[in-house]
Amino acid sequence: MDGRAKANVSWRTGRDSYGLAVTAPQLLESGDAVLGGAVCVDGIVVGVSGMYNWYDEALAASVAWFLRGILKGRLSDYDKPFIA
Image 1 (cartoon, rainbow, N blue to C red):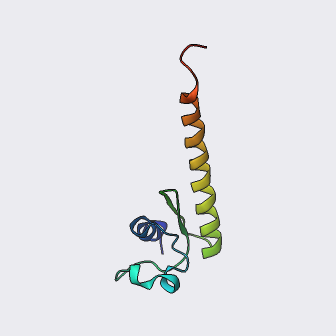
Image 2: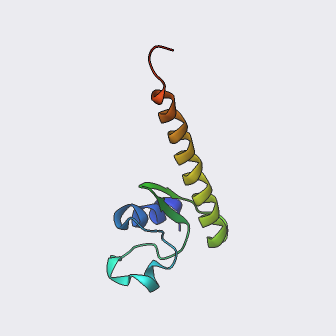
């Protein structure tokens, strides 16, 4: 199962892919990935594949939170006044 297939499920549902088949099977469509490895953090979706599912999910979550931190850092640059 590739990371893109996992990420598509998270993108469409707005939820992490792990356990989706158990917690909300009504959100799944035919052919959807049911393995963990994709996360949705504040609308940032990251899918990872290549390790065990729990490692895929941990790496995806780390990347998503780093991207969120980078975005917050860049947005804070605009909080400064134009005249110092």
